[in-house]
Every structure is written in C-alpha cells, then in structure tokens.
Length: 322
Image (cartoon, rainbow, N blue to C red; front, side, top):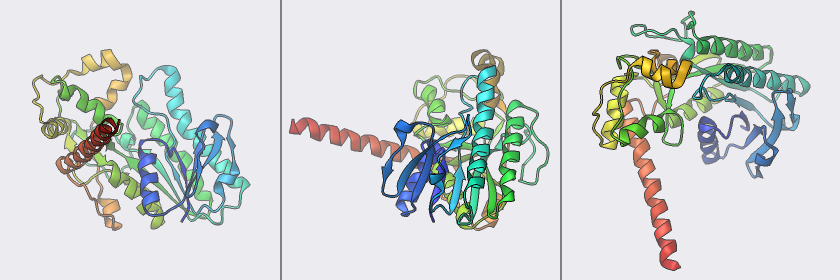
C-alpha cells in the first residue's frame, strides 16, 4: 500500500503519517506551500493549489489509496469571509483531487477515504445517531458537511471504494479542543458550558488514525462515524479532564450568552449536542483501544508527561555537558 494524504501536516494527518511510518507504509502528501515539501524515503511532498484547481499529478504515482483530510479549522471566529474559507477549503480540495484523478490513470487506486464530521447530525439531547440518519442539522456546520459529503460522493464515479468518516471531538494533547479546554482548568477557572448536559461524541486521536487506515485496508464503502463507543456529557468531560489534571472545578457552568458574546456564532460548537454511535465500524471488525474517556485522557496525559520528562532530561544532560 502507498497512500496519498491531503491535510497530512494537520493534527489528524500527522497522527496518520506516524502510524504509516511505524508500519512502513509510504506516504505522498499534498501541500499548498512549496517551502514545506519534504522528500525523504517513504515520505514525499507535492504541490497543489485548490483555489485554482492546480495539482502536481506526480503525486498519484504508485499510490493505491487516498485519504482526504483537507479543510480549514472551525475553531476560529466565524466571520463572513472565514465561513467562505471553511466551505471552500473542503469543497475545492475535493474538486481539485477529482480533476487530477481524471487526468491520470486511477486504476492502481483501490480505496478513497475522506474526512467528514458529526456536525451533520441535528442538535439533540435525546437522540442517538447512527449513519442511517437522514436529517441534517439546521446550522452553518450542518450545511457545510452536507455539501462536503456531496463532493465526496462524486468519487463514486471511479472504480474504487469510497468512504466518509464523520469525525467527532478529537482528543489529543498536541492540538485541537483538549488543550483549550484544559488551559482554564489548569488555572482554576475551568467550567462546563451551559447546562453541561449536551452530548460530546469524542475519539482518541490514535483510534481515529487507526479507523482511517482500517477503512482503507478493508476497502469499506459508505459512511462511518469516527467516534468512541461511549459519548459523554460536557459536564462529564470537563470533570474527567479536571480529574486527570488533579485540579478542582470551582466555578459554576458558563452561560451560553457569555460565550456567544466572546466567540460570536462559533460558540455554537460548545453547546450543540450530538450523541453518536460507533456500532457500524465495530461491526466491520474495528476494535477501539480507548473506548472510555477516563482511560483515553490518562493515556494522553501520561504520554505528555513522559515527553516533558524526556525533554527535561535531555536539557539537563546538555547543561551538565556544557
């Protein structure tokens, strides 16, 4: 297997690349910065510009599978212009990929997997969503994901499997939401949002990387939820983060109007409730390494402490040698 990855230098992409390197799976990746193109055994960068639908078609050479992760972060203030960026960064990348594949002989490619998001599911405190759900959340994110997935479906015209992974809240100490949630807790000002009863369907970043590779390897078709088996409420999530950090929660929950004043429309992602099932991917044979939030957080922070300790030891050794 040789994989072409878009978004390879992002949070999830970097984790997938690490898993590929550990399994000796060569990776080609696309980047919009010619300065960031790396060329080394098993890891080769190629230039593209989705804004102009430009792509170096050499990126497809020897490739048997594609992972699409490209898309601007939703964790920035949603100005009118940035909303356009969120949408175009997802839609245009897929259009550019498809255009490139049409120019090349795609017969060597056996599977295509694209990121999607659970933001497509309607906001609900009571529903438990499977991939069979047809309703779409009546929000900016819901509409973006719906259009995003429609562009993925266009790849069904090719003779390879096409799958979509609807990603939930990715927990990682290297980026994403977790460090931002942990920061106020470390400073004794952490608190849950709103009622705290909104469901958060989360996933350990290592399990998410494994789902993408599992989906490619098994040539799965259709939609799969990229979430752990046990969703938690926002109250529970914040409590578990505080427990692993050994910090007390001293403040009452933060009202919605406060966060909306600070973040504007983007505050929606803090209060939306989407309880999502992982049953479908498990029925395909995928086994989660981190099915529970407490174990997942302990794993992430123990590794983080290990890295910090290693860096301190290296620093001390350097000082002593000098």
